[in-house]
Amino acid sequence: VLPLQRHLAFETRDLDEARERVARVFCPHRLDFAHPGRLAARQHVARLGTLALSYIAYGAAVRIDPGTLDSFFLIHLVHSGRSEISLGRRTLVAGAQMGSVTSPTLALRMHWSADCAHLVLKIERAALERHLADLLGEIVVRPIEFAPDLPIDAGPGAGYRRLVDFVVRELD
Image (cartoon, rainbow, N blue to C red; front, side, top):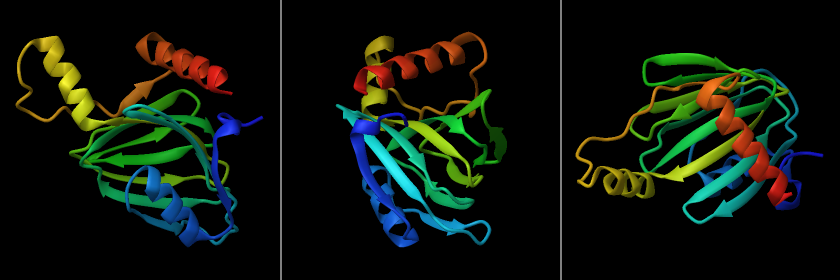
């Protein structure tokens, strides 16, 4: 059983359709094959107010280039396979032990292996900035930028992983 199975948004073998359908949840982006292959794309989406939790798999090695996200943050947990994620001038390899956090002010590029699938939490930038302002008791004057590395084998990253797993089980 795949995560968020009851929340299927689409399944397709067409690259253009996959690009367009994923863009509905996130933003317009480039999506190309990294190697010749057959696409078997799917996305499951649960919307939770200013958040959206997605399971995404392409079934082929792909390059994804949304550029600068502008209006939202993403937290990626790799469900299977691996991906190379470039954010600004930093590049990391995400997999079973390493997730990533993307900030809206930094250009994002990704290369997913054919067996790669991500659980992605989308957080609206305005909502996070309002929350931070409430916590600080003052207006946020600089953009929020997170370190992209999210180790999930221990510490806060492991707690985040357990929380997402719990939410996914409850939504399922």
